Length: 178
Image 1 (cartoon, rainbow, N blue to C red):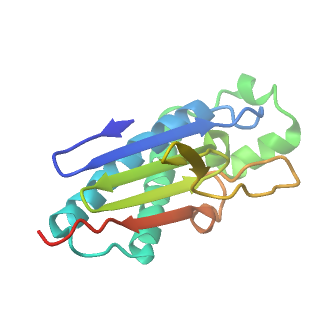
Image 2 (tube, rainbow, N blue to C red; image 1 turned 180 degrees about the vertical axis):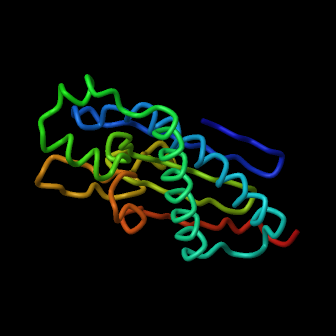
């Protein structure tokens, strides 16, 4: 999802998980993009008018908390309107069913990439195994190092500690005096 008001741009990309217990991860990814675009626009409206002010990492961390909290609320609202059909749960291993019943947001698991850019700054957020590349002078490099996970899983919005697992880049551009 992309939003581009006059004072900048917000891009959000999310990807659901493929394992059976993430049976609503496509919806989780859609909700992640929607809330990220909304919260990103709010962030942009607060930051862009003061383009000479440097954005601090703590502001980006607060944005991660707001995105995660809004995603959890959106997931709970969706689940309340669309409970899991018993026949769908019956196809899953009992341990997965227990986990989904205890924490329904597990079924909506998704990774997330968010980029917010304006004339003098950039904030990039990454949760999970997605890649964001930086291109300069014909060369590309990853903005974030790949996290080694020995269990072949990825970090997800459905993780209880998701906010702590976001990777963040905050960059300011020196465009000279206005």
